[in-house]
Image (cartoon, rainbow, N blue to C red; front, side, top):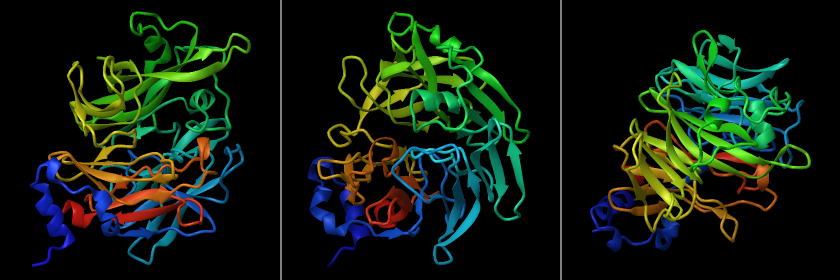
Length: 420
């Protein structure tokens, strides 16, 4: 009797991790990969924690650009669109943006709880804005604020100061506008904003001045540059995560210098009930598992760097993927299967290979989804991480990669035989 790949994977799911055959031995049995965008133009989606697939999983969002390997200029325009995978991977252009970066694009994503609306950031005149487009009717409206992350209930967004982010960590904010608080290390009127997606109204819910006043490991963070980065709303739309980061002040120029330090905060949507969930200074990539737990790569005091599961508003933590998920990556949970599958990736190894993979939490097994070569010219600000994103049914994974020789493009990996 011969076993299909699906039968084999189901059978091994019942085995203990120690009995599982390493997937490196099954390299030829990796899931199929299909490229859905084409050169000579370059395509990518960007970050890993946003909705790239429409509710039917037919339409896949992407950015399109004519160049690579340099910092965007203020006059550089990208196109935003979607790939119709039900019609020969046809490209459907939706609009343009002047507010974008290589790592997170222009925050293009589907609106949660909507069957046909997408949103992305842009620059108009002296401000950053966001556009909401109904891809079925063509109706478009513009909100007077950019978005960073959307609530799962589709009612609001959280926003940050993208001009300041660009100064503090180039490539994660937007060029084209100056930091309005460039002479203030911790401004009281800059921070995290709540944006009503129906009206576009916004108001400040958490200021940099407020957070800068919270001691870090018993000491006040004086004379350092503060900024917020990486926001994500909880699955029940009640709290949000924000990374509070700071850099030293150069004694000669007065500007930011050196590496950044990080602590993770969780906060109610209205800015109340702030909790320093990870005070280590080392918080990196993260995802909400559920409304009470956050999985992140960090190095807690007295512990090695690893992925850990934190329970919100407590000091309860446990290691995730010990001995298996041993390198930092862009982690999410598949939207189906009761959080049993973690989707993750790796940065380039010594051979410049990037390896997205699935980690099965109950059995501790790791299944590689492929090895994708990243040429050396893709480094620093304009590197191309795979940033794996799942379809809504958990059966497809989209990645960004230049391994085909046509520059960065979007590729789909069929994981249906793995997840069942």
